[in-house]
Amino acid sequence: MENKVCLDGAIFEEFKSDFDTVLKDTLTKMLKNGIPEGSVTGKIKISLETRTNDFGVPYLAPIFEHKVSGAATQKLDLTGTTDDEFCLETDAESGDFILNEPESAQTRMDDFAAGRR
Image (cartoon, rainbow, N blue to C red; front, top):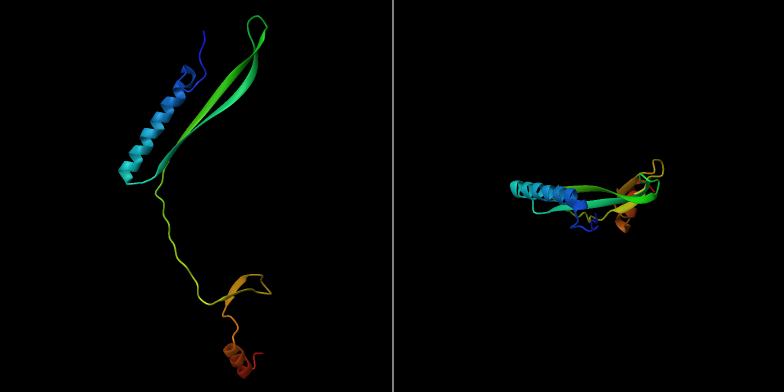
């Protein structure tokens, strides 16, 4: 008995059936929930195992394992920008990042007047 090893071969009937099931379920979920994007991923893992026939002759037996996954997710993007005039510094004691107003001639005058520098 000869079975051609290709995607159309009998060896992959279960894989194709599972793929079709996941594809249908993914599309149904997308339509039902108004989800604009989805994906179906199929993976086939191949291993070669040495076996022995009834006459003690070794041969290579391929083992095909498959996994089919589907995802229909609604992407949520929130965007924003902060471009205030802050200076990024590191707190000497804690090592935390902090935002301070950049030093300017006015802040130097204010600090000098208040006795802070």
